[in-house]
Image (tube, helix red, strand yellow):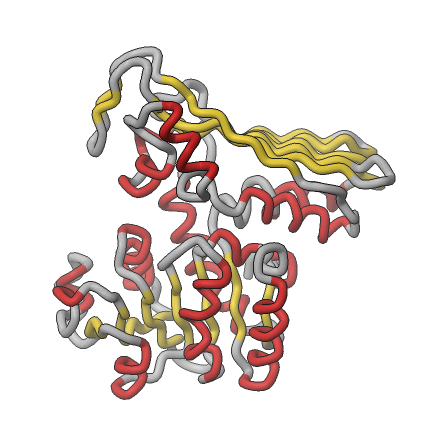
Length: 330
């Protein structure tokens, strides 16, 4: 593709606006528009919404179809949900036009897990239209899935994978602080988790991407969540949490193959978390362990993962793509 890559943003929440600001810094991209369902944003300049007064031409539209009549992007950055089935439906009109879509939807990291029929149908559509779609981010999308796969590149064999992530959620955006149950009674947070309305999305998908990459056929995937209880009063930019209430989560996914290969991923994400870090340990030949002190800053890294993936996705074959299908960089 010669010239600048024409990009439009779908969803103008905190991550979507951050994506626009990073795109504006990159000389190889041209921002041509955005889509958001908020009526108050329709017709406004994208630059005005995102604090970029220099961005004069791109407008916000209420639907993709409305935008398509005015501008023809090459790529859509999709930041409007966590569920694969819903995201596929949102992105279908874009893919029918042969566009590339990079999405922060957590379940799109490995969509065949929760949306098997839809994944087959969308892949078939893409191969016909020339479209392509990829789910990525920092986690899922890198720390506890792609990174373990990359580290295995120096191993003669791998028997098991252990991944651990401790995140100080006090530094994160409001929607995430809400998602981890900040300020809720522990019983209420557990109820929301059981109803699929709380917790970290895409965790099983991380495990299954690792297994897919290693060719491991895993047995039942177990996932558990326990509230982290505040041991002191906590105040963030968005929440005030009293001692004894939920200030975050401890979520674990595990699975094992018949051959004895195992994957164990452990996530602690809570307000005022001590010693934030990311750790990956392979039981392998040779043994490999990597620690990222401080952890990867999630909100900033998620946006970088989306934008950095665009040129690589455009060079990849049409279809539903996984992070392990495209080059890591370049």
